[in-house]
Image (tube, rainbow, N blue to C red; front, side, top):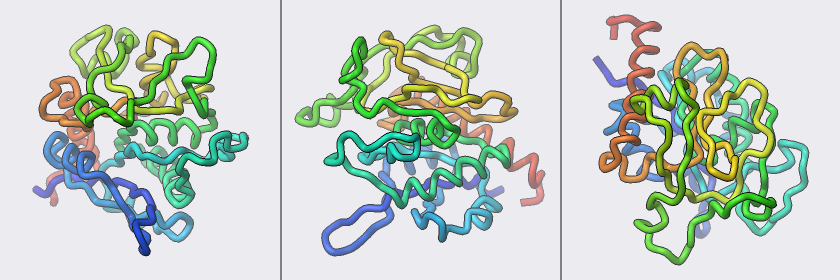
Length: 255
């Protein structure tokens, strides 16, 4: 039997004189080796993307992190920090993809920017600079640190007792996570349920209410050196199992 296929939407970047559709290797590696699925990069074609064609062969969707921010105008605000990178092509691709994937009840795993994208797609809003909000911690990494230091555990999150994330992690009530984001959830979208909170009250994980399968988002980066982190492995293994279950429900043992 072939592996389940996981769509991974690309970022759209200008590198030198040419435009590229890019996905960091760490996400693809985690899907392949930790989830046991086959990642398939979805170009950021926006309105020109044939999402129906892509979703017909998909068994799951992974929304990755990125250096770019979700366009604030999508949640009714002006961009406060225009010097920070934007990616309108990715926004135009992921916003309809999120709705289409949820409508099909495809397993969905959203990380960092992807976590924020789903909140915006479903009607929520973001803090454009979490560190500037009174009472909030600075959740950004130090760009001068090594990658190992940037992705090291940075703060605690408290898990909702009995909820999906806690169950995946064997009933744990808290965990340490890395933290590499400047933006974060301000108003949680209707239909999302809190799975974890930082000590300052920032939402760090959610699930989609009423979804029978796997629809989980986390603000941190479990894909980083996933094989060395048992908690991260459990998350990707649970996502992979959900993709296999979806594939079996759709196709049985025929492929």
